[in-house]
Image (cartoon, rainbow, N blue to C red; front, side):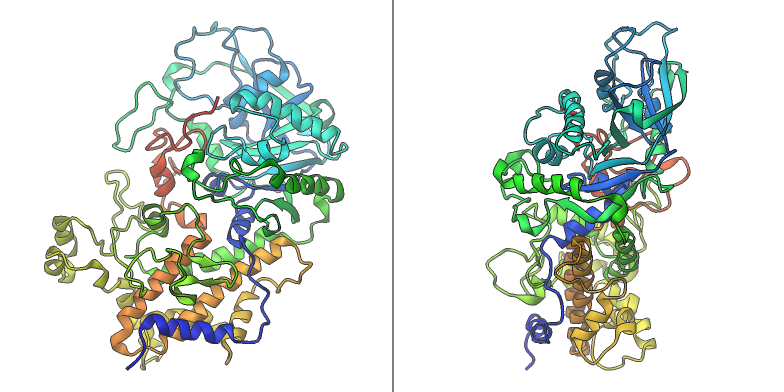
Length: 634
């Protein structure tokens, strides 16, 4: 009698573990470091991985256009808040509501950090019709030297977007959200001048677009033009709808459509080589040398379960990070970076993102939705062992930690209603909030289940309430023809053929060698002195490859009658791997028209549904919901 499937997986995992130790040890927090690199200077990824924990050296080349909007035509002095896009600055090129002839430079610009919503100022008297705001256009007078604070670091929220700068960079000297912006700007320039010895000209942050808090704009910018901007008429104010499609009343209703177009055009990067980032040397709280618990179990008690936090940590535990940030600024330059590790991360994501999702089949549930609905902890790593680099389902049983998110402990996955994002959710978004995909959806509603599954002849079983987890995922049938074409007529799952095709270029007699060949496709194994970026990227690449090798070895040992159980284990393992990787590309919308954007939360707009299941929305309509950010922190 053969041992249970789960124990077979343990056997093959053990065989790999006993191979010669030629692989670098897995890096703790490798997934978070990888995502910090991949999402850097990208609006989409930084809006979803919004609680940044990292600081990078960055440079903006000479003669780059920057924009500024305020109520005064006077050139900037002291401190300037600069936008990369004119549409971003135009939002703030409005007359002062207080009818002041001129506002203090820093006070005026801190107002720029709170994007104007449609209802803003409705209870205040309208300014005179002949009062204008002003759009300033400048070019950089030199290569700007900057510190890039990653994530949605300009978002004034209580959910962790300000943690890294307030707790590390500013050393707990600043409190408040919008009300603390003046002091943040002043402190940046004080640090730049004193502690950082004049080596930094300001910082880059992101909220609804990327911005620079620039010190000494008189020396660092060359004026090009100051243009008066007429005030926006009421008929151009926008509205947004709630999750039921009803227009909200008396609440912020989104951003101007032209600003949304500019923001979303930078989803995949700032573009034009306007910002260069040093990935060889950077500082991140995810670095395991700091031994920080960034995902506390009591996340609800510290106002969020939406990402890593620093709020609960004592000041002394953060001091080493602050010291290393100072050393980074004083000892390194942007120009010393030799390898663009973000481009290497792109290669890994571009290759394995579609392949991993393909292993789940079209009828599989979206891993983001599964994690949101089923995780009892806000720690996305609870199914993965950083010490071994292996999936706990395949590497260990009975560990004492609750890591089985589905099934009965034998790797059996329960099929539930799948709400896809990347491939499924766009076809009928105008008229139906549910994605219309050809894959079968396993609904808990008996009537809906019967209607949906009548074409595959299984409606009766489902209507009688039989265990959905026993239904064979469509990936088995989807891959059977490909399996036969590859000539695998013996035992094993149809999923094995798909994994085999992925691993074919790296085939070797040794599983360990196959893993190494696969993991080194885009980068070399790191040494102890290699950059943190290389260690993180290699760790992720190795984790993906070793998981595929282990699954393939396991599946080849199965008899035909065990294929269903093998497919379920593939689904469970790949789903947890995807949850561990947490790549934002799996949330990208597909098929958005020219008048639509992929509506992820962009501070201060968006709701929970926009985070969990982004979909195409019209620029004129904005987001389905609100409140994701907990409101603007004053």
